[in-house]
Length: 445
Image 1 (tube, rainbow, N blue to C red):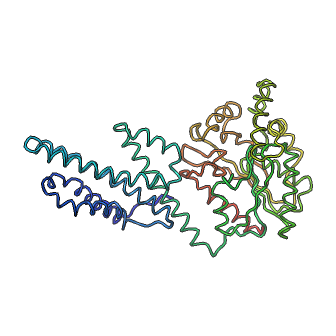
Image 2 (cartoon, rainbow, N blue to C red):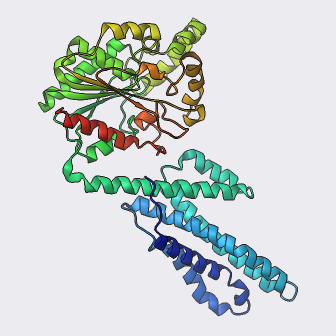
Image 3 (cartoon, rainbow, N blue to C red):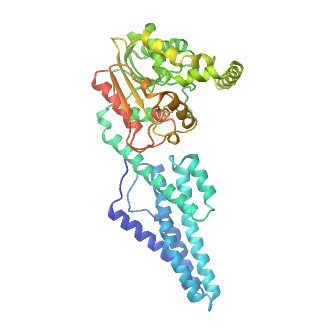
């Protein structure tokens, strides 16, 4: 949701910018009249604090600060554009007869513009979530390169303005429908992660999705199973977890939402005795028919290299608290041969509502590393994909939702769980999950 500024807001910010530009370019009048500094210095500092006031609001302190910083950077841009011709005129008109006054005017203007710039940049750097590391680093590096720094500044302003608008919209929408509890399902939601990740309190595998679901009434639990294990072992862990939740809460059943390999783990858990505890299963970008390129890589990579990679992963995972990770068992169970056999052996159970979701990445650079690299490999072997799994592998159950946004970027395997906490143009991942869970509620689950 991109909110357009109201003409009144644009007018107010324009007037604030012109006012600040007037103070910044008053230096030629101050030479020899330094008592005026006692008035103009406090005015310029006050203007730094008040820029953006009257041009809209934000529903949280973080967004208010980010919005203030964005307005300061816009005002800096405008003041800079207005100041250049004024300073050129000062040099042409006054430098010959009064060099000191001309230099003082230039220094005064530069100092005030720098104060405004750093006010804005520090605010957005401290509060923006969408800038990420990339834009922050590029901003620091290109900040010293003429022309490039202005282009980078424009990008930062655009990203932050869009973030304030979208995040404000999310908060206000959730407040407006709080009483409806649109995600308050009959049974709680159990989120099941994919391979090579674990459920962590420090950085949630599901990004901002659980918070959004909870804000709309959902009761959320996590699988807490191993990061890398065979489908059989993960299924055993998930079955125990379901029984644990049902026993402790008395909820009778759970709604499973599983990403990637987690979908296979859930299918086997249901087949191996967990069916009475499951009301619904929603698989998200799950390789139900495997990955052909994974088969080829396993055939091409020498066994000693595979063992070294596995040992390295298992050592690191063990140090992070994963008791018995098995890298190769997890990878082998994702090959096309095994997944297709699995898919035939374990059809959707009649007593559980099953549905699936899949997305498509439109181009390699639309995904973050390593998906931008693997996208080309999967495309070579299987065509359209999400950066890891071919789109032909996603469908399962009574209902299949294929997400194909109109914009060129597409939606990657990681985007489907909000892994990078990125606001994607044309796809609101948080609201998508609200829709999924709301639909489960409407079905009586």
